[in-house]
Image (tube, rainbow, N blue to C red; front, side, top):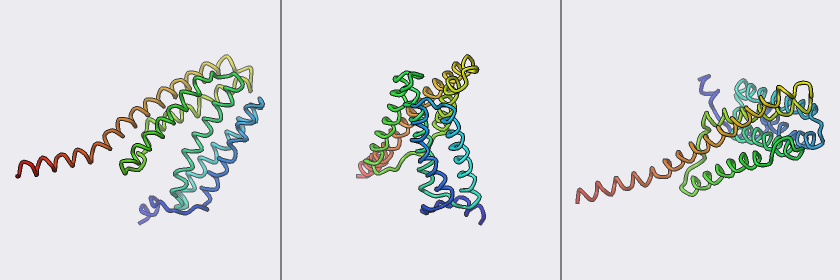
Length: 207
């Protein structure tokens, strides 16, 4: 019984984990403004606070049996918004080129299109692939490491190449996961057609 309670997903909104997730979202524009204005140390502190609330809300959701549909939407949305804010802010400061922003945004637009295709065929969104989680983690790690350079110039010779290596690897995995989602989308939307064709062949042979 205890295991069932832990895996129950409710439709509640006002839970402690959800409030922490909302706090993370509220901090996104603060994070962006701090980067654009060159307050990198403060931006990193905000990111650390956001990351800690992310860990805390996940722990509390399981501990208090408060896993909700809203929370399952807010968590990945917050991660993407922080990545987007970091990209835009760093590009605005000429610390990363705009093409890397375009690559990441294009992948999310690609997934949005896949979601529309699935919805048109009567399917909900696909479950998050483990590779997508790894890619998001890499981007969420690589971009702050790049920020360490302007925040602490003494570490820039080390932090910049490491940050770029992690970020570029994350961008590659991000698109690789997108291709997997596209293949899975194609497989899912063909399933009813395949089943229908099989039934038609069976009826035809019986006649």
